[in-house]
Structure formats: structure tokens, C-alpha cells
Image (cartoon, rainbow, N blue to C red; front, side, top):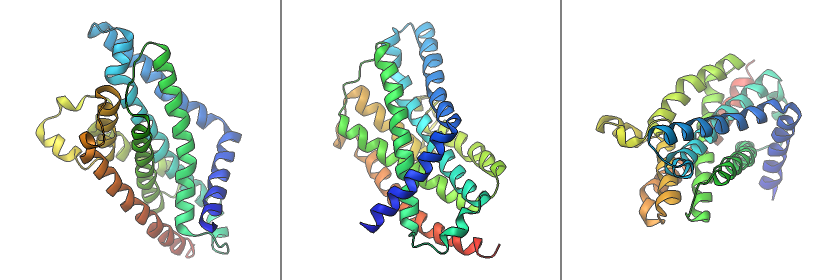
Length: 257
């Protein structure tokens, strides 16, 4: 119960700040919607596909992955940087807040943002003619594991490498864009050479996109995407453990300033 209360308190504080600022929420909504429309128009014109087929074939699932990656990884880095700049971390020294609760609170807040982005993208796609027949619980499980993975990577990068807002932007550019490209968010993985596919096998974005496409387009089941699910489960477990460790390390570093 104590962990639950602390987790909800952290998530509530993060979401309250986002709602007050509003701009971040608006921009995170604009990003997937804009790419959704542009990509569908390109596919419709160049591949001679109907608008619904264009969405269902490539656009919506991959752009959900891209949107979640940017908001979760970039958002968690920005959260840690904000805590440092506002000196909020100093208050944590005298609070009973546990490291795992702080990490899970950030994850819960970004799960709420991810849910909003996912609903927004798929609602627009369905309204324009897309047809998704996949397993809904399995899709939710993939999205949840992916959010945990992305937030975990962002949290670890933020605690170790980011001290200013400029650092957050640089980290997203340096790590985020290559991971998205290797994950198949902008180019289909069928175009990748074997050398890039071997590297992509260690990328959570790749496994999320492949799993989502298989479930939503090909109506795949758990056994069909077992390798992607196994990777996401293992990766999530590692980053949750890493989140606790790096939280403790972050507090020790902050005590020296």
C-alpha cells in the first residue's frame, strides 16, 4: 500500500504540472497526428492504396510507437532535469519516498500520456477508414511494456547524463532519433540490411513496432510474437531494476552539491 500511495502521488504531481503548462501536451498530440496524415497521403498517392489501407498497412501502429518513444523517453529525461533545476531532489532527502516508487510514479504518469496519444491516433485512423482486427488485451500489454521500457531508458539517461534543459534536448537527439530509425518508425524494417537487423534486435522500439504490426495487421497471437514479448519483458525488468539503482545513485550525487 505504501508503494502504491507514493507511486500515485508522484504521478499526480507530474500530470498536474503538465496540465498547468498545457503546451507539452498539445505538442505531443500534434506530433503523431501530423505524421499520421502526411504518411497516409504519401502512401495513398505513391503506393496507390486507399486511405484506410494506407493507415492499416504502416502508419498508425508505427507512429504510435514513435509518439510514445518521444514522449516517454524525452518526458522522463525532462522530468529528472526539472527536479534538478527546481531543487526538488533536495526535498527527497528528508522524505520517506522510495526509489522504486519514484520511478514507477514517472512510469504511471507517462502511461496516462501514452494512453491519450494512442487513443487519439487510432481514433483518427479509424475515422479515416483504417481497419484493425487485432487482440486488444495483447495490444495493451505491448504498449504497457514499451512505455515502461522507454521511461526506464529515459530515466537512466536523465539521472546520469542530464543536468540542464540543453542536456535533455541533446540526449533525445543523440539516442532517440537513431533508436527510432533502427526501430522501423520511419522506414520499414524489410528494407534493412542484415547488419542493421542484427543491431535492431537489441532495440525495444523495433520489438514494439514489429509486435504491434503483427497483432493489429496480421492478427497474430502471443505465440506468434513470443520473441518480441520476451525481449520487452526482460528489458522492462532490467530498466525497473536500473531505475531503482540510478535513483539511489542520483541522490548520492545530489548530496555533494
